[in-house]
Image 1 (cartoon, rainbow, N blue to C red):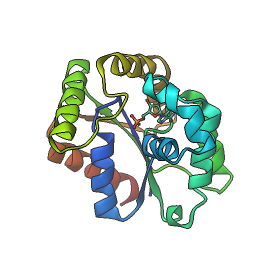
Image 2: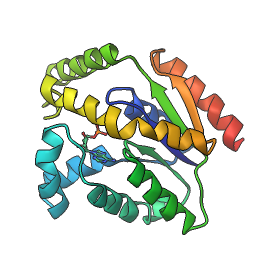
Image 3: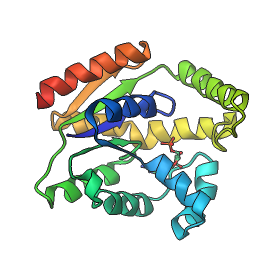
Length: 196
Ligand code: AMP
């Protein structure tokens, strides 16, 4: 199963991807997690990406597509994967199409989680509070300025992907304002219809 989870920052893509990993035993490919790991490890990619990420802007298509292309070659991706946070631009979606087509593969579903913008800010603030309460460090880009920038990037560069995938009949929209369980149930229904 190859699946894309689309949606604005804080829509619940990561949470739902983790549930799908548990239920279906396929891997979650979060470009945000991969880039944060690269920043932590101080790799060349990490050094290039850090300031851009901290400001809430998108890392270049070239860097992100390179990271994903390497990752999907790993053996654990052979059974399928959930893309969480990728693609985020039309050129990234086109690059993904090419990568998959070169292996004779396609996507089983593209699922967009729809959430109101005010709810997203509240979710981000909660995530910061919970992380601090648990003794952790909040993400550098979970602050009001960077979050506003992330939303603007989403509207300008990522939202057009809905039309891109709708035009090829792959897009399914789920109401992301529902409870986590209800969203999972809706996603499962879509996947059963798509892959049986
Ligand atoms: P996320 O964890 O998905 O919210 O991603 C955190 C940050 O990583 C984003 O705000 C971007 O700076 C960067 N990033 C993650 N995925 C991508 C992508 N597909 N394209 C460009 N930048 C990305």
